[in-house]
Length: 479
Image (cartoon, rainbow, N blue to C red):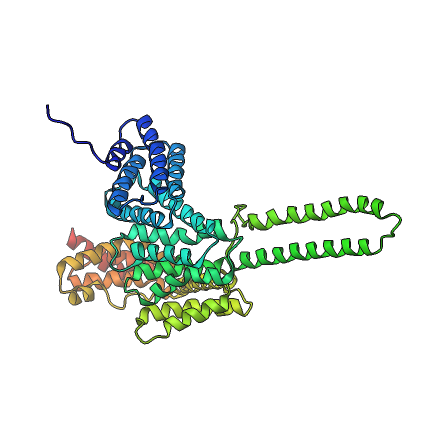
């Protein structure tokens, strides 16, 4: 018998992670966590880059096979928290690198029905990456390693990241960073975290990356400025309450007598607990962030030194090698940061200006319509015979005749309303009829001529015998 070749444990785990049964996949995820902890605890242990790529391929198809949104969310959290199972920073770095390379490679094969759960997985992995850096105390070396990894694998021109991965990453970066580190990060640290995006926005040749960085990161900071200032003011109020409470306690201690020191101390303990409780109640309000107009909790907001951000952007955008399109876009953002540093909020005026322009456009359109309606329509100078002479195409001439027949009653009604009691203009259709008859060469019969003559003379006028005889003679001749 031929002995079966035993596969490496990474390939075995990847096969079980991509199994058809959910029970098999769940067991494989639990075994993978134990395997990672056991292997990274060894002094000579650790994973190679190829081994982690095989593991991530199995995790990718484990997420692919999972149905139902709640189970997808639970599985996404479990997969993202595997980063904390690695005991060394280098292994953790390789694990994250393999994840983003797997997403870049498999992104084109994701259909629209499975797209949302992989968006969610990217968000959760980024969130846990920030938590791993937070556990290290936001050390500068760890922050630089994470930023270099993200920019190299996603935003670098040589990376194979598709546009969907780039756009989603730039959209969720500030949101997940604020969830993890808004309460701890200072303005200088936040500037360090967004500095790679500023450099890429200044140098990139990709217009989509430039737009996503300016819209998803730089302009998002400008939009969150009022909330950031409110958070800062609430923190200052909480600190002032703490100072007042401590000052009040010190005054009470100074005024105590030696005889009743123990009793006085017993009475002071409730006041101290109350002051501490008040500050504890104020702190969660600061951490929760501000609620928007729609009632949604916006969460904590990152604090920035707007003048420092404007200076850094100006330093990058003013270089000679920067493309003109990037420079123009960054200068617009720099003006907004300078206005924020000066104490004005340009975003409050934007909707009003846009609304005023919209109203002005509507008024101009209405005035144009009124002017068109008020202008009198000039009647045609010549008859249809002149139109026939001017029109070279007989087909066009028949179309004009049809349109003229359809619109003639409406035009006559309008002309009657405008012209009022001017009798001369009302007689124009008869003159046109007569002119048309003369031009066509048709001779009117005697009866019609007689009627027109009688109508002109009126009912009180009697015809002379000669005229009557002439009329009878003409009628007998016709008969």
